[in-house]
Length: 210
Ligand SMILES: Nc1ncnc2c1ncn2[C@@H]1O[C@H](COP(=O)(O)OP(=O)(O)OP(=O)(O)O)[C@@H](O)[C@H]1O
Ligand SMILES: Nc1ncnc2c1ncn2[C@H]1C[C@H](O)[C@@H](COP(=O)(O)O)O1
Ligand SMILES: [Mg+2]
Image (cartoon, rainbow, N blue to C red; front, side, top):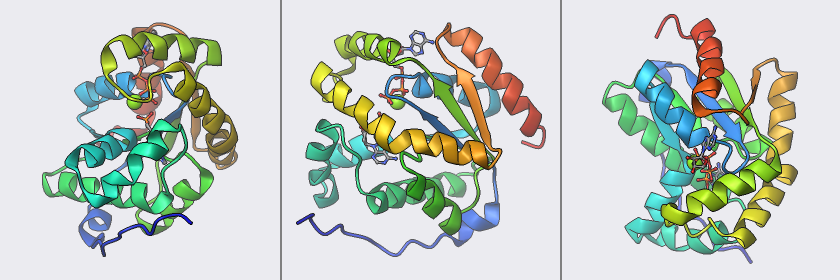
């Protein structure tokens, strides 16, 4: 039986009142989501929240919630929706208190239900950026990152499982937001700067008010 997830009541009123733009950043493992988010933050000053980073921080904190996460993440599976959404909400609220003018939610949603729950409880995403990269390239990039990242999931066995999770659970997210007219599909096989050029062209269409 799955362990019970500890949940707190989170007051979302300040986040909803701020009504700042929210962008979901989606792509396979190693597609360059974090790399591009760093560049977007530097240019547009949005707040970057990576659900994977939030989960890794939770593990490092030694909390009871964190203790349940290590095995899931090392198996390449998805962490339960409620755990991720609570961490994202808490981080968004802290950022709003500090005056955030908008969010890049990186690595979220990983399944359609995550997107639906986020949007019904918080606010609709303005756009979903999808970094489209072939599996062969993803594996090559992740094995390169493994040399320095120290990430427990940057090893070939977990990479294969993460790719499987991406195809089975996250690919439907791409179809879902495409059908809603919110998806920006970006070929992310090229250089970091070329990809960023395409990102900027798309963000400039919708960020004039930021
Ligand atoms: N366009 C690119 N060309 C070559 N290498 C890249 C490119 N973009 C990112 N990388 C490299 O690929 C690796 C993965 O990039 P990054 O960490 O940004 O991916 P990610 O999508 O955030 O992955 P994850 O889902 O595992 O967190 C890093 O070592 C990064 O330096
Ligand atoms: N949004 C998420 N839902 C469920 N599980 C997640 C989510 N974001 C990250 N995770 C877990 C599963 C991933 O394999 C690891 C690492 O995430 P990454 O975005 O690759 O840093 O964390
Ligand atoms: Mg990342």
